Amino acid sequence: MESKILKIENLNVFYGDAHVLKDINLSFNHNTVNAIMGPSGCGKTTLIRAVNRMHEFTEGARTEGKIKLYGEDINKIDPIIVRRKIGMVFQRPNPFPTMSIYDNVIAGYKLNGIKLKKDEKNEIVEESLVKAALWDEVKDNIHKKGAFLSGGQQQRLCIARALAMKPKVLLFDEPTSALDPKATDRIEALINELKEVVTIVLVTHNLSQAARVSDYTVFLYLGELIEFGKTKKMFTNPKDKKTEEYLNGKFG
Image: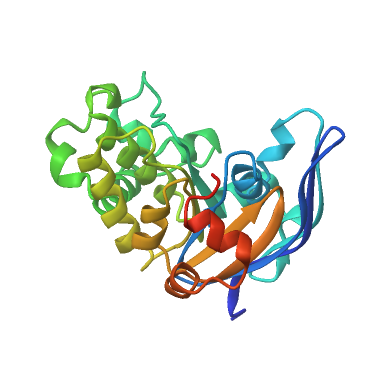
């Protein structure tokens, strides 16, 4: 098996004439949590949107370079398959408001036209909600709409929805920024559990969150990769002066 699950090679991203990401080279190991940090506007979200080809929905956006999943260039794979293998959880919880909790979890199958038997659906729903640490809280109300859940529960429902497709990589775009501290703790604990089954790439503006949950950290500044390495080492002994200044709150 390819030792690196995800490799980013000479990645450049443009929005019209703006050169947002410049020659990014990164690779991520299996079953690790990888934080992406940097000041606002440095390209964090742009990077993860490139990883599951979300830029194809953005007018005027274009990418150059290669992103490989298990050694295969994702630009040569059907984008629907790419987004099954590389799931995404967004900043604000976004369960489908008219759907039940049950239907939210298996929404990806319906949207992709994948037919499942009732037993298969039941199994996927329960397994995904268990992995998202939500099953015990919702199992008696599974056919109620997801909108009645708290913000933290809604975010875990969105995680269950992503996990239902059995992705290899899960992208999180500041998943706790809209949540209270208690719900944030629950999501952070969940991220630590999930790395047993999936590789995680986490955009966060919260340095202490990156320090708590990630194995490796990427530091971006003005669209460039400044430093990438083991989180503990980077936070205690950064190689680059810019990283040190950012960690010390000199800019942000």
